[in-house]
Length: 420
Length: 145
Image (cartoon, rainbow over all chains, first blue to last red; front, side, top):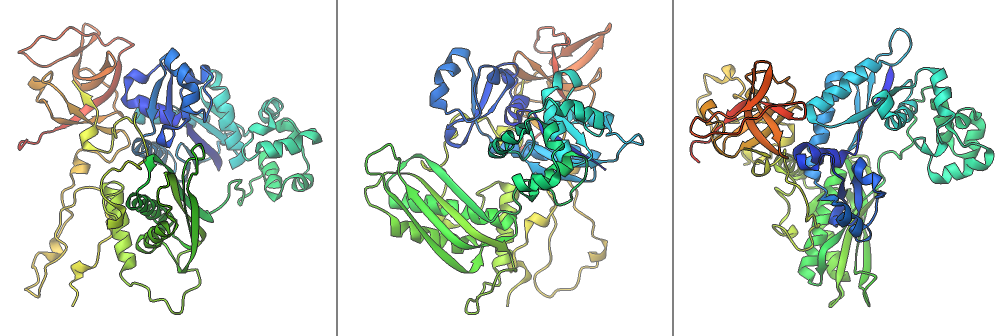
């Protein structure tokens, strides 16, 4: 089978452009939570030297001077557009793996001549563009790692090759890899690139020529597998990213500073409920709960504290986790302190049912049904449809700031686009 | 004793849509003679083809298409996976905003025409620069509004 990966170019910006024609052909950036920094840039914005992660206050002049369009992140829209482009891929392939919000792997048969089906990939690209309005690039290869490099090359050569690159051909690989810096390869971070540099490994071709045993010495067994994969040998267990998360965090800056204990408790409970939901989705339960709250370090005497506790038995029940988090917030509250951020960490995650039971604990027999109903309602009617009362109701000053957010064009009837 | 209804039903396992269906009868009455003949409820999501990646929903503002049966405040279902042809009602991009018009080829020239005999609209040729965003497949009107 051919491994393939589709990625959407400048996904957040491209999603915004589908529903707001005014954003086409002008520089656009999308900001992170709380409108802090640029996390997505249109090609026009990249040309103005706006970097990934640039804080807004640093680029305010450029924004003004060039009339850059700025949007807050609209995750409702991005999630729906992600669902749509994956649905199109699923029409073209039975094997699809959603890798991130803007990338998905899929498989397709190898052609009789041993090459990847470039024509089919072009067809899929056209179908995604026609059906969803999203521009994509596709990389094909005999292994996952090669498809990922092909995808990066498809980006770099989009104007010439039309956004699809196939790396089944070993001669083409040799030619392209000789020019492709090793730090651009999937899974090679800057630290690893720096370690490879003194060994004379600068291009992807150098890495491909590396004996697997010495790859293991320099990096780890992961680097060894990467070298094999780049040579066209499939390693089933090859995954450069860490596997199932061992911890999860929900930490957010407040939209406006908070001094009131009730408000702080609500904010903490909301984060705890969200963290519990995140691990429930992965079928995990947490053993350790850590909460923290602090003020801005740019102000005098900022409050700062954290607390942690063990949960026995391990849990993903928001009533338990949020209850603990709320009480821990009360215990560490410093009256008069000006808080700007709080968060919840769930650690020592284990699969539900696999963890050690607690001999003395009595589990609530109705909890599984209740939690499934809660998650179902929130899935269907939007996050926050049902929660626990301690979360408080409605929008709060501490909610994430998204002052320049576009409407939820595709998921809320009151916000659908208007045609005259 | 707990009635079965006291057990929460996980909505996550239900197909999205508007399946309106009684889940059972409380009490110990005579069993329904129709129970083996039940079918799924009529699904408007399927009828309007809302479950497709290429289906989007727009709100109509104004009466430009009233003679074609599309009124102010109607909700229309727009399909991007259709090649627009002469006669299709389409959503197009004009002057940075969306309009709803009928695409009509006359003498080989494609026009975007409003359908409202009480008002005149400027003639609009759909040249290569004009983006046809999608084709209108259905309109939904709430008469209680």
